Amino acid sequence: MHLLEIDKLVKRFGALTVLDGIDLHLPARSIHGVIGPNGAGKTTLFDVITGMSPADGGSIRLDGTEITRKSIESVAGMGVGRTFQVARVFNEMTLLENMMVAAHTLPLSRAEARERAFGLLETARLAGLAQQLAIEISGGQKKLLEFVRTMMADPALVLLDEPFNGINPALIERLIEIILELNRERGTAFLLISHEMPHVMTLCERVFVLNAGRTIAHGTPAEVRENPAVVEAYLGH
Image (cartoon, rainbow, N blue to C red):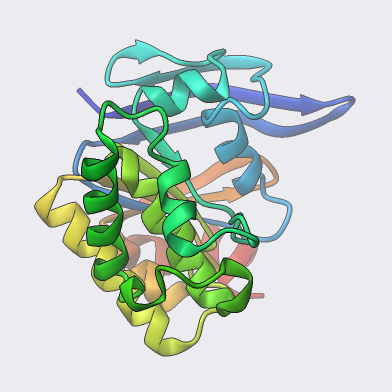
């Protein structure tokens, strides 16, 4: 059984069909990518998976359970985390306070939550900034903060929307290390959207390619790279 199973997913905005029968199956403990030109429907796909935007057709199952029309809170509570293209952090809170916000629904004591928060900040090499306001750190550090805050709930699946965009090379390398470490040690599965093709090809076991709301290719990075439809729709631009 796959961890995430998406079949014939449809999303419309008025007369515009943004997702047109998307199929996507993600095994547990895997790292897969989603690529495609701007307007292909990639972020909308994440919005529908997480309950931010209701589907107009098709089905989404997480570990065999239907989540197609679940609320954002329900999907998150079932083990799905998400980051955004522009990091969403609480600028007027410290980094530690940002982490603790994510712990308020978890079955942890305050001491246990602080320990987990510091451990994740240490993993991101942000522990030394724990008492600093989030507004004072760089955009790349905010992306790392948002990411490790998502990991407070120990999700089974994390959706990463353009995680490498706007981050300096050193922070990109650190983020890649963290993704691989969490995948290897916790078994966390990742589905990531990125235009940074070298990182997609390095990280991902398989890649889904969207164009105009449809899946036009799916395979290993090497297979996708050599697919004529992908070259025409995306890689060749």
